[in-house]
Amino acid sequence: MSKVSIVVPFFNCSYIDHALDSLTKQTYTNIEIIVVNDGSTKHTDKILPYLDKIIYITKENGGTASALNVGIQQATGDYICWLSSDDIYDHHKIAIQLELMKTHNAFFSHTNYYAINYRGRIISPPLGIQTLNKLDLITRISKGNIINGCSIMIHKSVFDHVGLFDETLLYTHDYDLWLRIIQIFDLQYIPQPLLLSRIHENMGSKKYASFIKEENKIVINRHKHIMEQLALKYKEHS
Picture 1 (cartoon, rainbow, N blue to C red):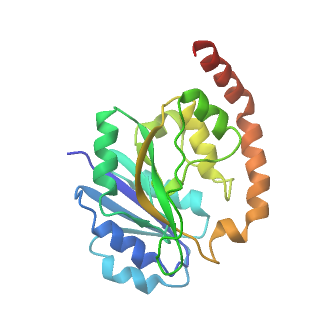
Picture 2: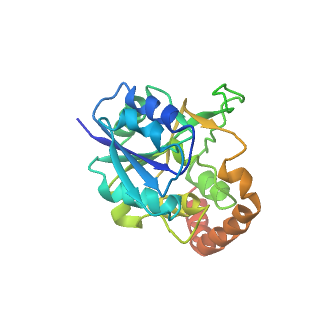
Picture 3: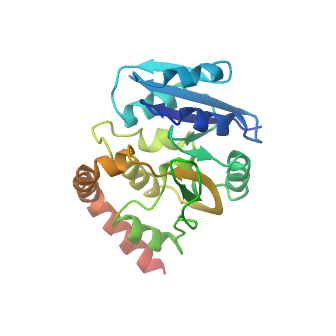
């Protein structure tokens, strides 16, 4: 029975208990929940009721990428997932995603998802993006990030090939990693919406939108040449 490690970076987030509640109620039971407290000064009390069900790591503030890397390095699971402390998993996410990854012999997958508001109410249709084939994926992701990081599941061996998150990227470390992964591995899409992604005023993507835009350009340029070469390769085979 495969083990799945879920890394939860935590920094002063008031919704952390909602995230952890969704993990402790997963129908797939062979999981480990790794909460990485990235120098928080608020809401740490909300973690206390879960201490007997989680691995709890504290560190100095270093950003989401550093917290994820610490969690991945501590993980003992065969597969790695990531849940932001303001988001929520469907109770069947791990079970459904793992089964489909094994069925398709996939090493990297992402799922459909809904947006929710600060009260936890669904406020959108399903938002996941399914690509038609590898060429379509390369073309679309070369222009911007189309994968919700909290919807992913990655076989741990993938990190041996591509490395961990780039900690110098404060906001687009996920996009950079996805580009590195798809240069080697295929991406499996799971159409069921298995993640609730919270939209609220304090979320980083709202507060730092201008910085994220600039960092996106850096990541796109970093991978531009190899992604263009990959696109040419798949065009020749299509």
